Image (cartoon, rainbow, N blue to C red; front, side, top):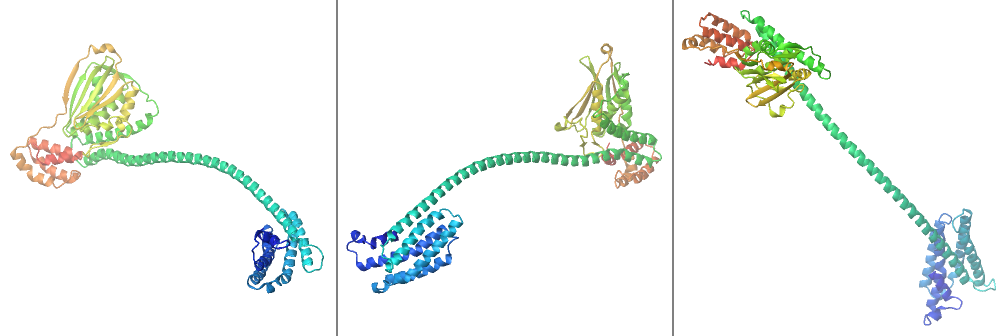
Length: 529
């Protein structure tokens, strides 16, 4: 536009003198020639920017180089020299005009935007340019029309550019609206995905907690399995050791009794396991009969008396003799045997197990079995009757799977009663069984009988006895309690002594060996008096 303005101002009526009357004539001529020369490459570049696929890029570079040479001659040569450049430059102008015309025709045929309108404007400029060339060369006797042609092309270009800007603005608005819609949609999708991610996170966290708890249970069950295997093996090992040890003792009067009691102990353990699994989810069927309470307790004590003797346990009973209970005798007998067995096992050597009965509220009779063992930890009181609540003590004999207590709970519950435990650590435990009374009138006729049984064998070794057996004791100290054959060979040599105290001492050592009681065996060898 600036070049067109300068071209108009320096040609025709030379309006430039009205604007700058003092301008040098030579400068004005240079401006006139420069505006003419520079407009050709610039216009070609402009049209090519509008339709880049329809006009040659190579020609653009060529015309720029030629125009640069012509412009340099206008700037640096005298007027009498560069005034001939338009004659030489006319060929470039004509060729450029033809190429632009061809390019616009291509654009029209290819239905480019605004190509037809541009072709019209350019055709007018092209026709005017032909007129001016012929007029300049005195071929036609017309007038110089280039200002009008430039006005037309500027107008067409302005309209084309404004339309393109308008279309671009409309496109931008449409794209902006589309972008806004897309952003809203994306925000919704992001929000939805965020909710999904949060939900998945919540699910994963819940699953992680479940897996964590499951893992804890698996670890706990694995430890429990190992512990139970050890406990069950240990519970079976003790009576098996007793049977093995007794089988090699030829001159033991109670050999058969020892083997029988050990077998009964293993059978009781197996029955407890079977019954716990059998009655855990089903009702225990019982056949009730009237039984004197004292007979039930005495029978149970008789069944564990030998086990008590092996640990030198003293039984003390305080039982109501005339009370009858309506129970399944076999099941309740096993309940008492289980609790008494635990009391013996958890009692110290030469401990005391007390059995007592009393009436509760005129409706129940309570059987209490108390030991003076190590007691039960407070954190295990609530779970002591659950299945497989294993407990172990330092004494190698004292270890139990807890199956017996779980069976006791199921059995007593099936009779409409209950079982509880009270314990103080290092002072012992008391298990209490409550059984409903079938006849309330028998309470007034009850009598209580107190009995102490299973007193420990008494022996006092005098100085002569100690002198006689001391060499044998030194030999026995070289053996562990499980070396049965070696120990028995030494003890057989002591049978030649007539002293009752020595015989009682030998009997105690034999009992300790039978039950693998290392602690008792060691105490006896230290001549406990």
